[in-house]
Amino acid sequence: MKTGATIYSLMGMLREDYFGTLQKLANTGCQYIEYVSTPEDENGVPVATPSEIGRRVKEMGLTPVSSHVHFTSDPESMKKVIEDNLEMGAPRLVLPFELMNTADQVKALAETCNEMGRRCKENGLEFYYHNHFQEFVPIDGKPALDLFLAETDPELVQFQMDAYWVRRAGHDPIKMLEHLGSRCTMIHQKDLSATADPVNLYEAIQPPITDDAFKKLRAMGAIKNGDFVAVGRGILDVPGIVAKAKELGYAKYIIVELDNLNSVEAVDESLKYLNQLV
Image (cartoon, rainbow, N blue to C red; front, side, top):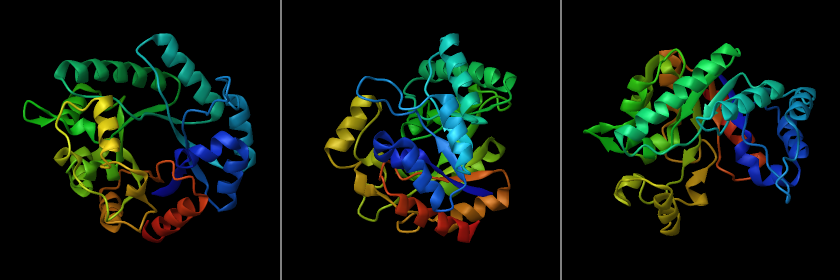
């Protein structure tokens, strides 16, 4: 299992100096990175083209392993995302966020993901879904996530488990790794501050979980920047998570994500901590 970092951790810095920030990350010895949507300038134009990003990243000695992407069910939207990421050199595409409040909503999303997974496979790419906490809304007595897993083809849609958000949904990341089994071949790892209150966000808000619910959680302080800390500094059982991932043998990468903390030092500290465990 290899360690890497999502550049979302440095999003504020990337907006100011995209390639300079990536070079600072490369200078720490980080080798593997995960892309996110390229920042835009004040005119709404991406600060760099896909081909330029792919070329410059390679020159820095960085290896892209995945990319968080956004798309719709429109075939042209899917095509554009795939084409861009082929130029950027990302072999795995990850849908990072969707709402799952009803069975119909989940089934429609699963259909879109299956189609994107099929298109990715045709182009030599892999496709993943990444969780937050809203995927654990109960539908017919079970988490919406279970329905999503049942409705998606495991040959087309894999899973990138975010250990932090699993915990904030009131579940155990170690047990979730067992539950996901061979479908979970990438892990997102951050750490949860001891000051986070409540740890289980379902204690602060009731379903349905909408965009407004996220805004409410932020407004009430249940989700705040201080909840995200360098890996090893918080209350998550990171050694246990890594040990279970190694035992199961499915995860290829464990990727540091410190949601927009904008600290190369914190990413480096997190990677050094994880490298002692893997």
